[in-house]
Length: 67
Image (cartoon, rainbow, N blue to C red; front, side, top):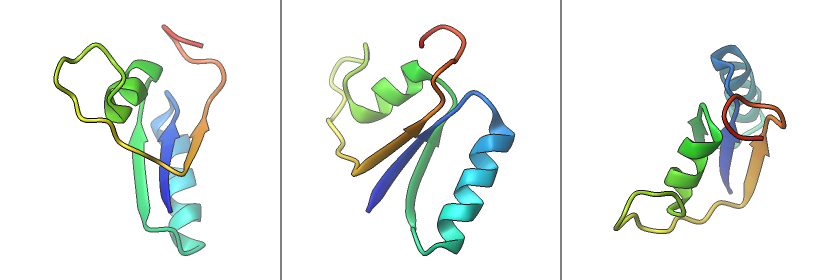
């Protein structure tokens, strides 16, 4: 299962990664902003970016620049 973590707090990302890895999940990707998430998924403003699929996105609701 591919999981994308989106949070502007590196400590929250680290905590979530640790808990998910301990639970047996291995395909975990992390970004620090909504814009980075869109770019990671291939739907941002970067031309020629390949679309990526993930099974689950865990994200912070309130982030600087994009909610």
